[in-house]
Length: 199
Image (tube, rainbow, N blue to C red; front, side, top):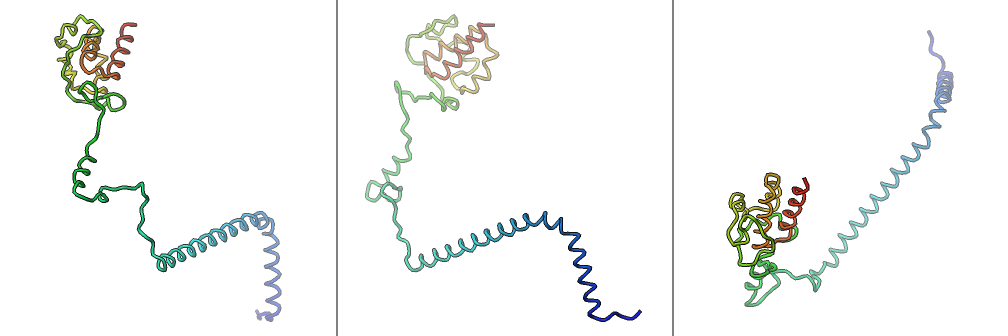
């Protein structure tokens, strides 16, 4: 078959393309707002990136022209800043933590009582609660020795409370009151005694 002239082929191709675009027009119209929005967002991000690049170049240029001075605020002090003969003593003092002391003993109350595991030595004081276990007479109750109560943390004591009877709990509370008198331990024991007595 002979080839049609160039002009005819061009017109037929344009007509078919126009027909195809007409068929796709409803879909194109629906997608057009999203296409425009994505192009606008892309343009805005590109502009922001270009502005940030310009600001970075400006910062670099200004730093080269006017180098920054190494200044620190008056309130900022560091160990290295302390000069003179007593700098070693001052740095040694900075490593020492000053803890509150009551009756010559460190306080182990509050949130740190959970981790307090220091052995406790009974101090001579009159008991505030009488117990059948002999804590009032100054001797160490059996339950204290069995549990190794002096080395227990609050969490360890809490785990062992369910296995103890009310007299043992009262003995532990009396022992705590005559020794360290730590509020978290006293509260824990008193609450357990109340719950166990209610059963």
